[in-house]
Length: 486
Ligand SMILES: [Zn+2]
Image 1 (tube, rainbow, N blue to C red):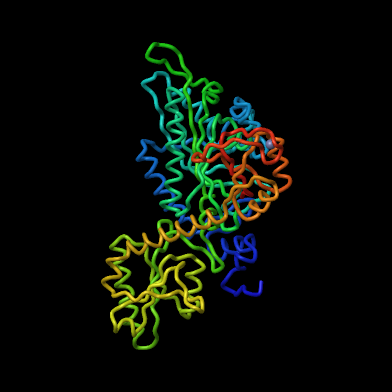
Image 2: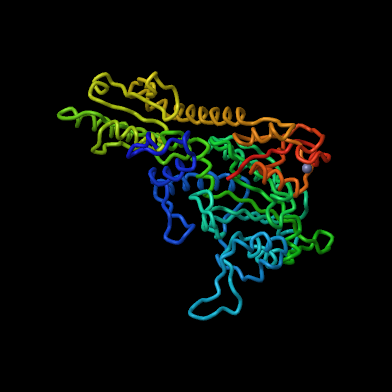
């Protein structure tokens, strides 16, 4: 803890868990709510969520989806209609037994996810092939009782979106499932700067009630995996439970095939853990509340002229569509630099009296080249050039974060063909192994190493052989990725 200053946090390299917990509070992303397991998302964190939400929502609209809202309360009997669904969610449910001072005739579940209530509505809305497909997304909050809460990663209440679609047949529903799986991976890469491992969940890790579940798994900077978005093909499971049928062109009654897909505030946790470093947050520019911070430096008579120029630059950058802030806090440059680093601001611009005279700014990136003393190497850029090149600079910084994350992923991934190599790999990253697919065998691996199957990579090379744990024939025709996971 020696390196922890009043402003800073325990270095990530010393203790990731302490680093994470201190950082979410000190960077003012979030706070704990009064009820155990709940979180308050503070303005700096909520702005990240808004940026995430708007860019993801645009992708949903571009792929033909519309937003709607469904109720928070669901009759308890609804969850019981789909057997696997109720088994999967029962331990996490919050149940309302009283309302308006009276005991309820039927308890209400606070939604843990909305397949059931939406199933009921689709039963009412769909009757003919002409009603299909139904392509709806909902932005809402859900509740899953959490015994070991961690802000953004596991909280009793969290924010997310849940897409729910209904289709005439399996082929169309599978196409939709994979389309949204691709949207999540593309979004993670191009907005959050996180290259994901894409794959299908093994049966034990599937969503409760799904036929197939697809996932994007990010590697955090401690080598653990974080499931960051899932897309499910639900077959006719919910259509049968909620009697969602339609008359096809031949007047035959058919069950619809449904999908669901979600991404949540967990993604903010992924951004923190995939990019952060000893100094604090590292925010990708497309999600950063402040993309550029201008730090005016100077006292006395020059201060005013410097400040004027800082505001002028701010206005020009705002005009160019950049999220920019002048950091004119009454604090030393050193304090401000450290705080901007902690908060992960992508570009820091210094402007002092001498810079003003020379007509340039000094630009430092949050992550990038450092001198012998570990200080950022600053770029000297003329005022006008800075404004005209700002988008290129932000894009280049995004690409740098992607490359850095991809290098980290590649350096911490490997194939293992014996348990010793496997155990070593999952201590620091992802291990690709052949597996028999048995749940008991997965459990033995988990007991020994804390690693679980994250996914069967969609782009895995075909391979067969003996299971790394039990020696039985491998099940999936390719290697499975195992890792410790959040
Ligand atoms: Zn096995």
